[in-house]
Amino acid sequence: MAELEPLYTADEMKAAEAGHDVDALMQRAGTAVAEELMRRFPDARRIALHAGGGANGGDGRIAAEVLQAQGREVVDERPDIVIDALLGTGLKGAPREETSALIERINAAGAPVVAVDIPSGVNASTGEVAGTAVRADVTVTMHGPKVGLAVAPGRFQAGDVAVADIGLEPGETEHRLVTPEILAEVPRRSARDNKYTAGHVLVVGGSRGMTGAPALTARAALRADVGYVTIAAPAESLPVLETLVLEAVKRPLEDVFEAAGKAKALAVGPGLGRQDETKELVRRLLSEVELPAVVDADALFDLEPAEWPAPRVLTPHEGELARLLGRESREVAAHRLAAVKEAAEKFRAVVVLKGEDSLVAAPGCGVLVCALGLPSLSTAGTGDVLTGITAAFLAKGMEPQRAAAAACAAQQLASHKASQRFGLVASDVIEALPRALG
Image (cartoon, rainbow, N blue to C red; front, side):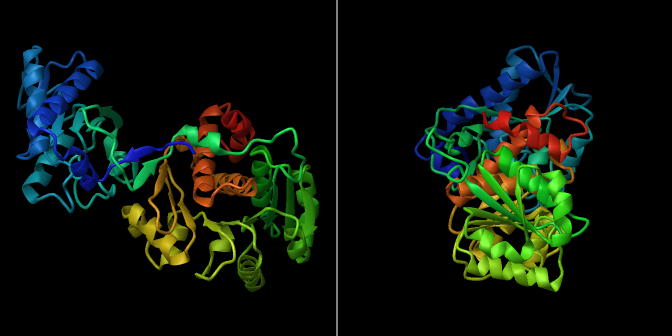
């Protein structure tokens, strides 16, 4: 199993630092900040330092000393660059009023900002921003990336993240960052496989006027290397689906339980609609079919926790997750890590909170954070693509949380492999999938 990158909380960093010489750690940290600043901004001569009273401030003051020894000048006005060393990883709420004023001053300086360890105002353990926060261009973080640098909204304050080695051993962390190496876990076809043993996905959706969604899901599953895809859709949609996905078998929706008997995984919801009869169909499929299932889009509407007979992977965006939890979307956006963990426990399922930082939670487990893609993935249909990839990996027998995390990685890496980055559409991602998986 691929080793994923640790993401440290404040407490986990304290544990990693325990027993080490604090002064030596600060000297290495401050030197690392200075060296990164000089490497990235070699022409910067005038440095403004905003340092607090704790260890983070100490790191900043050492950085300033190193920079002065290299001929830079520490100034109060009109700096070429600003060092933010006000608050460290211990922040748990909003900064105090006087600190908030200094943060506003940093943001208004009109110069690039280098943050020490974490931008001031960002909760290192969650990514939450309770008040004002520094908008850094570069964050030099010590030992390993912090949760708050990977999870929004904190990740949007961090700029480029550079990890400085300060001589600590790797520690155990609850949450981990997904790396491209996770794709090595996806089973590949062998010479012994046929189209059935390579994985069979059943896509359930496609009401009138919404056939594009299951078509994208089916095509994504095929490009994610399953051998067989069936689409179960209302009879009036089947002629359209025949033209959209040549390789998939089409079945009328009333045959869905028979079709499920031959599949290895389900993808339920793309373009399904929210009529009472479709809600009942979703309930029955999830409660009766003993196959792993991805639950997306319309299938998430009015979904209730239940004792399901097989693994379920829910893939909501912020608005859908807010509805599942009975919250406002802005509350989920502000507390993404807590929200996805709560949903995983509530539904006893893997939950993927989609976004630039896709968060993959499972009951009783840490969260896997996947942030490998381009902003251009924020376009219609990419959620349907993710559903298809996830279903494909489940059909190949992957453990559900790893399958979902690998699917996020595959889709996000495909955004880099696509022929264009601007004007990207979901079909471009599908066509690039084989290159990402290769």
